[in-house]
Every structure is written in structure tokens, then in C-alpha cells.
Length: 237
Image 1 (cartoon, rainbow, N blue to C red):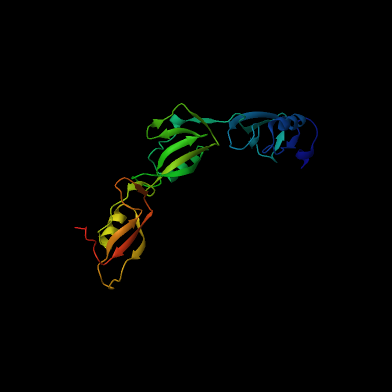
Image 2: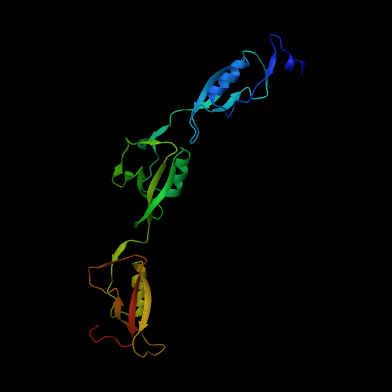
């Protein structure tokens, strides 16, 4: 305690807490107490202003002599950047995995939209930065510079949502039609029964909506409504 409050030359003073303080203010306090602040390192922290002290050695509360050098770490004033060429391979890779990898680089990654792809679901098909396409099946723009703390937007694959030609279901038995639709990732919708049918009767499709024309498409996951009858149409083989 005597050392702590002794006021002659060679006295020991309690070191203030500089962590969390702006460098300019810390320099004023250090000068008033005859300390010397020396920047030992600088780091970039997303969302933090430049010149903010994040660490100090010795720690606050330590007893040190006048003119002691205090080594500090401060945040950088300029935003750090990453080139697209330095990013991990993203096209064709699992979104969740790449999102985690980018987070370690202080870059956020979000799903912008989904698109049909016959491959594995939840894989990256396209990547956008500030509204511009930077990665796709056609390649990537390696020269683009990305600010740390910013966000990449991804188009991610899914197995439903693709277009398929509307199949011709007329004349087919219901179970046969159901199998065909499921293989194309289309569902049977409403089933309208025409005429009087026995409980165990074989039912044939006599009409469908949307109709078959050999040209029109339907999206995977959508439904086709059918009209059925136990009487097979005369023009069916």
C-alpha cells in the first residue's frame, strides 16, 4: 500500500483499464499518468470502430512504475477484404457447410432463393454479392473483392419445383397412373367418380385436369385431378 500511494520519483501507480477505450482518449490518460502506450497489434472486428483498444499488457489494476510501456491491441480503421479467388469452392457444395466456413472468415451467407436441380438438395447453384452474380456453374469472378462483415446470397438446389410435361393419363387404371405421377414427382389431386361403380371395380381414367396436349408442362409437386369410371372408354386400347 505504501508503494501504491508513494508520490516521489520511482512510485508505482495502478494501471487504468484501457480496454474498450478509444486510442485517442487512452493516449491522453496515459500521458497524464506518465505511461507510454505502444500499439503491439491491430485486428479487424466486424461492427467495431477503428482505434478501439481490445487488449493491454500489463492488465488493468497492475502496479507499474512511471514511464512504463503498456502494450495494446487496437481495432483497424480500414475494413478487411477477401477476394472471391480466396473463398472456398462454393458451387455444387452443401450450403450449410459453406455457411459455417465463411462465418470463420467474417462473411455471412444466406439463402436468396431455391431452384430445381436434379442433383442433391440444399447445394449451392449461384452466389450473389451486392446484387451481382459472382459464382455459378459457368465459373466465378475471382477479381471481385468482398468486404468482411458483408453477406453473400445463394441460390440453393431443391428437387421439387422443376417442370415436366403433363403425362397422358386417360385410359390408365388409377393405380398405374398414380405410379407414373409419383415417378415424375407429381401428385394425384381430386378423384371424381363418373357413373355407378362397384366397391371393388377397376377404375379407369376418362379425363384429367390439366389436360394432356403433349406440349404443356406442370411443376413438380403440383397435382393432376382425374375423373374415373369402371367403364373403359371405347377408344382405349
